Image (cartoon, rainbow, N blue to C red; front, side, top):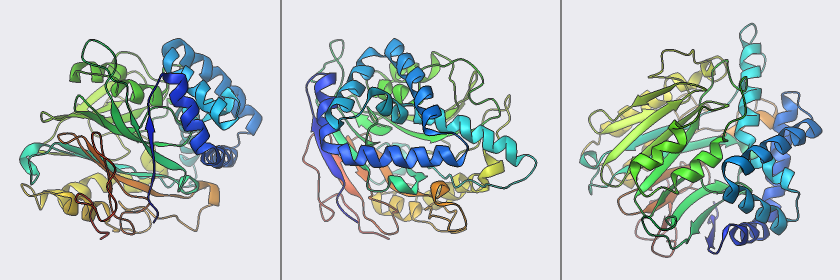
Length: 390
């Protein structure tokens, strides 16, 4: 596996966007084609998706003008339309509305199973070898995104009460902000999909990726929770948010409801089905049954080393291939159409205490962690905090 692309970004939102767009233009175009193919597999044409994205672009402009301005910069730098970039930044909502459609179809006949598999974990300081607070996950998503992701370190020079914190994060080319990362206040997050029968049936609210960006804008843990809690959601999502001082909350955020999971014996894990929320029925299991065992298995793999957990243990647990290919470490299922094949695109461990993002380029069973500190140069695969593939 190759070294992940690493971008240093500074300046205002427009400047940051232009830099990203220029540096990742071919990757952005690849991601667009990957998503258009996925949407088409569920019956949505390119024109329909672009029309939907245009509406979402206006929603983003209303709820976070700075985020939309950075999107505009990405479009300029990559020589794409703002609507095309909006496809990627609203792709969560567009995708999960289609997943709900797939799940409703699966209620009567499972014709098109889904490979989905994000498995999340959170570790409090008392269970890690060096007392670090860590959140992480396997990010399992469309196989076509492999090689079209990158790590960014954003310098904004803010201070509490005046500006926004710096952060280091992982994202898909074309998406503003970061879906997993940690900021200079020690606040970090990971993200996974949830699915109920009500996806996309209400009004358009702030998109999930905008919420992720706003979490990393926060200086205080209470303010990091606000982007998830303050407004309803068009589509459900699972947020795991942590703080360097030793606090982790997993939030199951469905369209109108919120439910919370906290670490037990220093560990919390989650998959793609509802565990705490009892008011709304989870339907992800209908199309991706592996979710019912992945988080529980990951918890067992981690807790066997409780009190001495380090990157080597985490990497090994995320490399687990029980029930291959639909395992914690996900591999493409050749029985599925190409547009529906998913894989572990990256394994991620976010060290909130030391402000370091550890990421693999592909399945952890085939790739070591690469380390990106908020306050230091990225380390090579043989660097001090890297770990060999299991």
